[in-house]
Amino acid sequence: MATARTGLKIDWARMPTYNTLMSVAAGAGLLLVVALGFRLLKGQSVVPDSWALAFGTLGLILFATGLHMTLTWPLAGQGFPFDNIIFGEPALAFGTLLLAAAFFLWKRGTSLEGPAGRQRTVAVLTGPVSLFVLGMGLACFAIAAAGWKYTLFAAPPEEPISGEFADYPLLEASFISALYVLVGLGAILFPAVLRRRGGPVAWIVGVCWTIGGLAFLLFGALNYFTHIGLIVNTM
Image 1: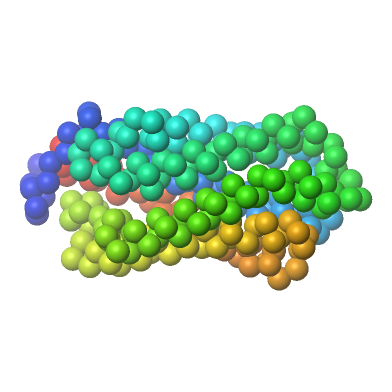
Image 2: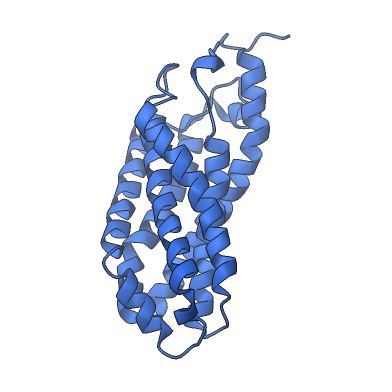
Protein backbone atom coordinates (compact mmCIF):
# COMPACT_ATOMS: atom_id res chain seq x y z
CA MET A 1 0.00 0.00 0.00
CA ALA A 2 1.37 3.39 -0.96
CA THR A 3 2.19 5.67 1.92
CA ALA A 4 0.38 8.99 2.15
CA ARG A 5 2.15 12.25 1.51
CA THR A 6 2.24 13.37 5.12
CA GLY A 7 2.48 9.91 6.62
CA LEU A 8 -0.66 10.52 8.68
CA LYS A 9 -1.74 7.43 10.60
CA ILE A 10 -5.00 7.08 12.51
CA ASP A 11 -6.05 4.35 14.91
CA TRP A 12 -9.57 3.91 13.59
CA ALA A 13 -10.46 1.41 16.30
CA ARG A 14 -10.31 4.36 18.71
CA MET A 15 -12.25 6.75 16.47
CA PRO A 16 -15.56 5.45 15.11
CA THR A 17 -16.69 7.80 12.38
CA TYR A 18 -20.32 8.01 11.30
CA ASN A 19 -20.77 11.66 10.33
CA THR A 20 -21.36 10.37 6.79
CA LEU A 21 -24.71 8.91 7.86
CA MET A 22 -25.43 11.98 9.97
CA SER A 23 -24.91 14.28 6.99
CA VAL A 24 -27.18 12.28 4.69
CA ALA A 25 -29.91 12.06 7.34
CA ALA A 26 -29.66 15.77 8.20
CA GLY A 27 -29.86 16.74 4.54
CA ALA A 28 -32.87 14.53 3.93
CA GLY A 29 -34.50 15.88 7.09
CA LEU A 30 -34.11 19.50 6.00
CA LEU A 31 -35.56 18.73 2.58
CA LEU A 32 -38.55 16.94 4.09
CA VAL A 33 -39.24 19.80 6.52
CA VAL A 34 -39.32 22.20 3.57
CA ALA A 35 -41.55 19.85 1.57
CA LEU A 36 -44.06 19.47 4.41
CA GLY A 37 -44.04 23.20 5.09
CA PHE A 38 -44.73 23.90 1.41
CA ARG A 39 -47.70 21.54 1.39
CA LEU A 40 -49.12 23.10 4.53
CA LEU A 41 -48.75 26.66 3.24
CA LYS A 42 -50.23 25.80 -0.17
CA GLY A 43 -53.19 23.94 1.27
CA GLN A 44 -52.19 20.65 -0.31
CA SER A 45 -53.18 17.29 1.12
CA VAL A 46 -51.00 15.70 3.81
CA VAL A 47 -50.88 12.01 4.78
CA PRO A 48 -49.68 12.27 8.41
CA ASP A 49 -48.57 8.64 8.78
CA SER A 50 -46.15 8.87 5.85
CA TRP A 51 -44.52 11.99 7.25
CA ALA A 52 -44.40 10.48 10.73
CA LEU A 53 -42.52 7.47 9.35
CA ALA A 54 -40.06 9.68 7.48
CA PHE A 55 -39.40 12.06 10.38
CA GLY A 56 -39.24 9.19 12.85
CA THR A 57 -36.67 7.28 10.79
CA LEU A 58 -34.37 10.26 10.28
CA GLY A 59 -34.94 11.55 13.80
CA LEU A 60 -33.95 8.24 15.33
CA ILE A 61 -30.72 8.12 13.30
CA LEU A 62 -29.75 11.69 14.19
CA PHE A 63 -30.79 11.37 17.84
CA ALA A 64 -28.83 8.15 18.39
CA THR A 65 -25.66 9.21 16.59
CA GLY A 66 -25.81 12.76 17.92
CA LEU A 67 -26.33 11.60 21.49
CA HIS A 68 -23.45 9.13 21.27
CA MET A 69 -21.13 11.74 19.78
CA THR A 70 -22.18 14.41 22.27
CA LEU A 71 -21.70 12.21 25.34
CA THR A 72 -18.68 10.09 24.38
CA TRP A 73 -16.65 12.36 22.07
CA PRO A 74 -15.46 9.50 19.80
CA LEU A 75 -13.55 11.87 17.51
CA ALA A 76 -11.38 13.31 20.28
CA GLY A 77 -8.89 10.46 20.58
CA GLN A 78 -7.16 11.10 17.26
CA GLY A 79 -7.04 14.88 17.28
CA PHE A 80 -10.52 16.01 16.17
CA PRO A 81 -12.29 16.90 19.44
CA PHE A 82 -14.02 19.96 17.96
CA ASP A 83 -15.90 17.77 15.46
CA ASN A 84 -17.88 16.24 18.32
CA ILE A 85 -19.43 19.66 18.98
CA ILE A 86 -19.73 20.67 15.32
CA PHE A 87 -21.51 17.51 14.18
CA GLY A 88 -22.79 15.78 17.32
CA GLU A 89 -24.74 18.50 19.09
CA PRO A 90 -26.63 19.92 16.06
CA ALA A 91 -27.49 16.35 15.01
CA LEU A 92 -28.84 15.62 18.49
CA ALA A 93 -30.93 18.79 18.44
CA PHE A 94 -32.34 18.21 14.95
CA GLY A 95 -32.98 14.55 15.64
CA THR A 96 -34.94 15.37 18.79
CA LEU A 97 -37.06 17.90 16.91
CA LEU A 98 -37.78 15.39 14.14
CA LEU A 99 -38.78 12.74 16.68
CA ALA A 100 -41.12 15.22 18.37
CA ALA A 101 -42.67 16.08 15.00
CA ALA A 102 -43.03 12.39 14.16
CA PHE A 103 -44.78 11.72 17.47
CA PHE A 104 -47.21 14.59 16.90
CA LEU A 105 -47.97 13.48 13.33
CA TRP A 106 -48.57 9.94 14.55
CA LYS A 107 -50.84 10.91 17.46
CA ARG A 108 -52.59 14.04 16.20
CA GLY A 109 -51.72 14.29 12.52
CA THR A 110 -55.39 14.14 11.55
CA SER A 111 -55.64 17.80 12.58
CA LEU A 112 -53.52 18.64 9.53
CA GLU A 113 -55.48 16.62 6.97
CA GLY A 114 -57.93 19.41 6.17
CA PRO A 115 -56.73 22.83 4.94
CA ALA A 116 -59.04 24.78 7.24
CA GLY A 117 -57.12 26.34 10.12
CA ARG A 118 -54.11 24.04 9.95
CA GLN A 119 -51.62 26.88 9.45
CA ARG A 120 -52.80 28.40 12.71
CA THR A 121 -52.64 24.98 14.40
CA VAL A 122 -49.03 24.47 13.31
CA ALA A 123 -48.07 28.00 14.33
CA VAL A 124 -49.60 27.67 17.80
CA LEU A 125 -48.16 24.23 18.51
CA THR A 126 -44.69 24.97 17.12
CA GLY A 127 -44.38 28.45 18.59
CA PRO A 128 -42.74 27.55 21.93
CA VAL A 129 -40.15 25.17 20.44
CA SER A 130 -39.27 27.75 17.78
CA LEU A 131 -37.22 29.51 20.48
CA PHE A 132 -34.94 26.46 20.60
CA VAL A 133 -34.78 26.41 16.80
CA LEU A 134 -33.70 30.06 16.86
CA GLY A 135 -31.04 29.28 19.47
CA MET A 136 -29.64 26.46 17.35
CA GLY A 137 -29.60 28.83 14.40
CA LEU A 138 -27.34 31.15 16.37
CA ALA A 139 -25.23 28.10 17.27
CA CYS A 140 -24.87 27.32 13.55
CA PHE A 141 -23.57 30.85 13.01
CA ALA A 142 -21.04 30.33 15.80
CA ILE A 143 -19.91 27.02 14.28
CA ALA A 144 -19.49 28.69 10.90
CA ALA A 145 -17.42 31.49 12.43
CA ALA A 146 -15.18 28.95 14.19
CA GLY A 147 -14.83 27.00 10.95
CA TRP A 148 -13.61 30.08 9.10
CA LYS A 149 -11.32 31.33 11.87
CA TYR A 150 -9.65 27.99 12.62
CA THR A 151 -10.12 26.31 9.17
CA LEU A 152 -11.64 23.33 10.98
CA PHE A 153 -13.13 21.59 7.95
CA ALA A 154 -9.96 21.23 5.88
CA ALA A 155 -9.40 17.64 4.75
CA PRO A 156 -5.94 16.03 5.08
CA PRO A 157 -4.05 15.17 1.88
CA GLU A 158 -4.75 11.48 2.48
CA GLU A 159 -8.48 11.97 1.87
CA PRO A 160 -9.53 11.43 -1.77
CA ILE A 161 -11.05 14.38 -3.68
CA SER A 162 -11.24 16.79 -0.71
CA GLY A 163 -7.57 16.16 0.05
CA GLU A 164 -6.63 17.59 -3.35
CA PHE A 165 -7.39 20.99 -1.83
CA ALA A 166 -5.38 20.39 1.35
CA ASP A 167 -3.06 23.26 0.41
CA TYR A 168 -6.09 25.58 0.37
CA PRO A 169 -7.68 24.87 3.76
CA LEU A 170 -9.89 27.94 3.64
CA LEU A 171 -11.69 26.58 0.57
CA GLU A 172 -13.38 23.60 2.23
CA ALA A 173 -13.71 25.54 5.48
CA SER A 174 -15.68 28.19 3.58
CA PHE A 175 -17.89 25.59 1.89
CA ILE A 176 -18.94 23.80 5.07
CA SER A 177 -19.21 27.04 7.04
CA ALA A 178 -21.47 28.47 4.34
CA LEU A 179 -23.78 25.48 4.75
CA TYR A 180 -24.03 26.15 8.48
CA VAL A 181 -24.81 29.79 7.72
CA LEU A 182 -27.65 28.77 5.39
CA VAL A 183 -29.15 26.36 7.90
CA GLY A 184 -28.65 28.87 10.71
CA LEU A 185 -30.32 31.69 8.78
CA GLY A 186 -33.35 29.51 8.13
CA ALA A 187 -33.53 28.55 11.80
CA ILE A 188 -33.28 32.16 12.97
CA LEU A 189 -36.11 33.20 10.63
CA PHE A 190 -38.28 30.19 11.52
CA PRO A 191 -40.22 31.97 14.33
CA ALA A 192 -41.09 34.75 11.88
CA VAL A 193 -42.49 32.16 9.45
CA LEU A 194 -44.81 30.88 12.17
CA ARG A 195 -45.93 34.39 13.05
CA ARG A 196 -46.59 35.48 9.46
CA ARG A 197 -47.67 32.04 8.17
CA GLY A 198 -46.10 32.46 4.77
CA GLY A 199 -44.84 35.37 2.70
CA PRO A 200 -41.28 36.27 1.69
CA VAL A 201 -39.78 35.05 4.97
CA ALA A 202 -41.11 31.54 4.38
CA TRP A 203 -39.63 31.63 0.88
CA ILE A 204 -36.21 32.63 2.27
CA VAL A 205 -36.28 29.85 4.86
CA GLY A 206 -37.33 27.35 2.20
CA VAL A 207 -34.49 28.34 -0.11
CA CYS A 208 -31.90 28.26 2.69
CA TRP A 209 -32.95 24.83 3.94
CA THR A 210 -33.38 23.40 0.44
CA ILE A 211 -29.87 24.41 -0.64
CA GLY A 212 -28.40 23.38 2.71
CA GLY A 213 -30.31 20.09 2.70
CA LEU A 214 -29.24 19.16 -0.82
CA ALA A 215 -25.63 20.04 -0.06
CA PHE A 216 -25.51 18.03 3.18
CA LEU A 217 -27.19 15.04 1.53
CA LEU A 218 -24.90 15.00 -1.53
CA PHE A 219 -21.74 15.83 0.43
CA GLY A 220 -22.54 13.10 2.96
CA ALA A 221 -23.08 10.58 0.17
CA LEU A 222 -19.77 11.60 -1.45
CA ASN A 223 -18.03 11.20 1.90
CA TYR A 224 -18.77 7.49 1.86
CA PHE A 225 -16.11 7.32 -0.85
CA THR A 226 -13.74 9.93 0.56
CA HIS A 227 -13.86 8.61 4.14
CA ILE A 228 -13.30 5.02 3.04
CA GLY A 229 -10.31 6.26 1.05
CA LEU A 230 -9.04 8.17 4.08
CA ILE A 231 -9.29 5.04 6.21
CA VAL A 232 -7.42 2.97 3.61
CA ASN A 233 -4.69 5.61 3.29
CA THR A 234 -4.15 6.07 7.02
CA MET A 235 -4.47 2.56 8.48
